[in-house]
Length: 273
Image (tube, rainbow, N blue to C red):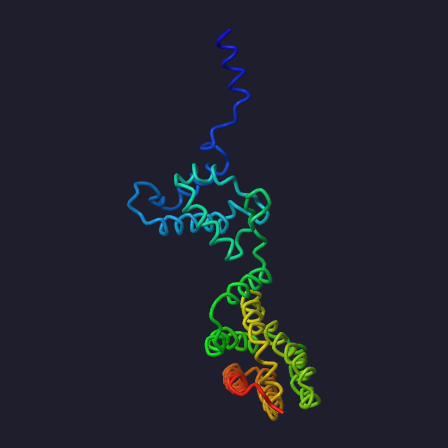
């Protein structure tokens, strides 16, 4: 009688959280990498949170966790990792800010699609809450954009190179129309980025480009700025058409410096007749 009751009770009780599927993944991951020292109380809470975030990221990279997978509850993850909730929540928050995880109703997290467009959106959100300076933006653009130009010179099809040249020359028609030129400018830079054939760098470049749009509107109103940009676009396009990566990078660098300097100037003198 007692044995029957015991068996019945065991059938209705949930499995111990430490033996759920996520715990198995944690154990499997630990077989191929040194297990982080989560316990003991000697580690700072921030360090533990970083280790948890890295462990989840490694599961995603290895394919143990895939896009759309829903993570267990915080209680289950805490048991699986052997940590308390505060550092776990720090790790989950960090991965959410990075765009790796998305918080769903009910407190559960899912793995995002990790697409370049999503990552670019996350980049924009992160940049929006930091101190923005033109110098920092263009320093970042220089690092990303110049490599895209180099890759474009090496990888772009001839059809795309000719399109880039057409877009560059079409700029002459909009030297007195800042709004129209800004639309053309976006097409010109996106064409170069797509020619590099690297979705991740392209997404990063677009995020950095979009970050400066508000101040670029001021700069495009300054007389002579568009005309100089057009001539520089053509110089870049000619180098790309010739497949000369070094010349294309040098021309693009000069263009970025012009855009940076004219932007700073327009911000210092925002009121113009």
